[in-house]
Image (tube, rainbow, N blue to C red; front, top):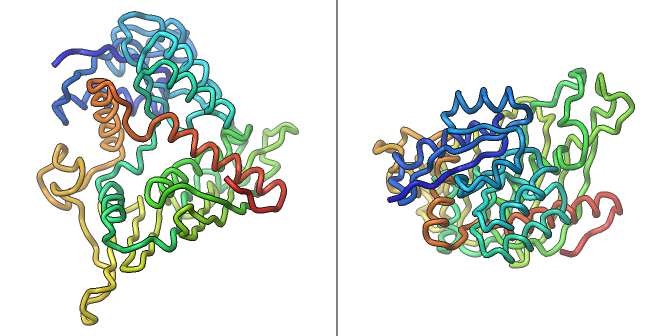
Amino acid sequence: MREIGIGIVGGGYMGKAHSVAMAAVGAVFDTQLRPRLEMICATSPTSAERYRTAYGFAQATSDWRVLVGDPKVEAVVIASPQETHRAIAEYAFSLGKPVFCEKPLGANLDDSRAMVAAAEASGAVNMVGFNYIRTPASQFARALVASGEIGKVTWFRGEHTEDFDADGTRPATWRNFGAANGTMGDLAPHMINAALALVGPIARLSADIATVHAERPGHEGRAVNDDLGQFMCRFENGAMGHLSFSRIAHGRKMGYAYEITGTRGAIRFDQEDQNALWLYKADDPATIRGFRKILTGPDHPDYLAFCQGPGHGTGYQDQIIIEAKDFLTAIAEGKSRWPTFRDGMEVNRVIAAAQASAASGTWMEL
């Protein structure tokens, strides 16, 4: 067991989540590497110092170059806006440092390609933060599909719907400007990642994307980005699919949900009930044939480290702790774990194809 100095760029929503995760992961999973909270970076010296004190870091800075370049920072976590990801990652890789980057990997496909090139040229461990697919229930769903429990997958329906921007009278914020911050840049990556993980690569798609609240107070003539989108697709394995995304879906708070239909059964999941998975098996006797609710417990992936009681459940922060465990394990083993930067680039590739399809009104081949 040895310590490893962690530097986190960004102290807000995800910066706090990763700071808490790194502080807890050693105790939860008894990891070979034990994180030392070395430095945190925020946009101003005042906020950086506030986060340092609150989260327990040794140092604070308002310059991410200082953080990445500090020899005491041995691994970098990027939890800052998408537009900053590429430069931070490229500098870290130039120093041979492992990098964990929050989704989406880059602000666009070009950024993602450059980040993959830098990661693979350096040989350093790299990983992208798609936390929702790491719930014990969704990890179990992946295992069920991979084992052939529901047969050959024929259909996938996925959504990531929330209502945080449903009020069209709410003044515009940074979330309302720039493609990287719209629904396709912000929410869509999570469900696209789930589709790729659960079913496999997408071969072609046809998309439609829309802005509903185009004139929010305070937009000052700037173009407001997309509120919702959807696409039909065909996966490389022949399965058909439909994915939809919205930040204006009244009543949906964490609508990361999917249904997978196979030749021998089906699976349903909804993140708003993240500790349950629904399984239908076509070969059950007719008298009991129906969806059964499976509550996650110690026999499901990564659950036991948190709790010994079935049905007691894990939460959002636990997903981030699982990510921290996987990142530290990858560093200890010297081999990147899924999802790597290349996996993150594939998500950006699907988003770029969807945006091109919506603009042209045609099917796009991937």
